Length: 127
Image (cartoon, rainbow, N blue to C red; front, side, top):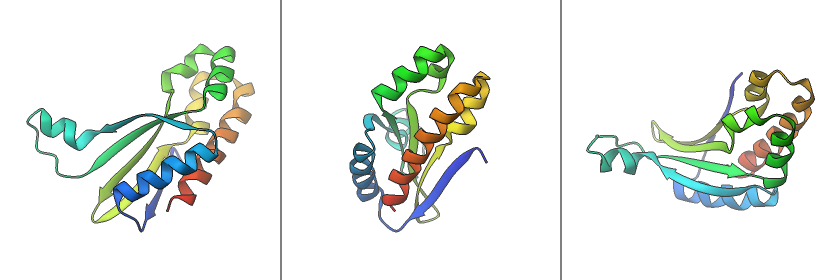
């Protein structure tokens, strides 16, 4: 499966705040929070569903994988989305183990698995 997505009982803003704290505990920082709903509405497009993309990074891990294979930068930083769908708040991400397959470098699989495990732990702790 390409993605990891879970439902949460909290609202979007509370979920994002918990997620930021839990990501920091796993040594990931939020570089940018992109509010897709606001941006589309700013451009005159009607989009009424709250949808935010958090770009997250662990600098040491980013350097480690980029030193090994520069193509990994095509999908860095990691993205975690928080959005509302049919009245439920969801948290999801593409799995690093799925993405890493595109660079055909077996040595990176273990690093991707560790990063994925840590991101899933932060997500699960945020629900």
